[in-house]
Image (cartoon, rainbow, N blue to C red; front, side, top):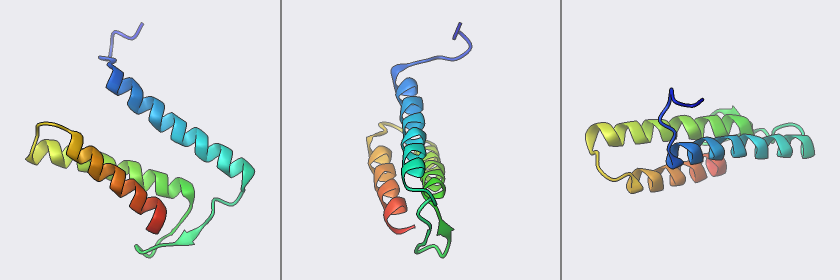
Length: 92
């Protein structure tokens, strides 16, 4: 059924993590409507969903740049991506 893609545990965990984050944001939106808008250091007015999107987009670029220029183990870009996510939800 899923022969068209190489489903590995890291791939499955990535998708589970993304869908879990979307689910958590849905629960937060139902419980506290309005998206908690604020203006951050980038000068953008963002909601929780916007900050999640910026975090995921930045994480993809961090990993792609790491693979293109450095390669090797992916623990460092993972740490950088987690720091980027904390920064986005805290300051953006």
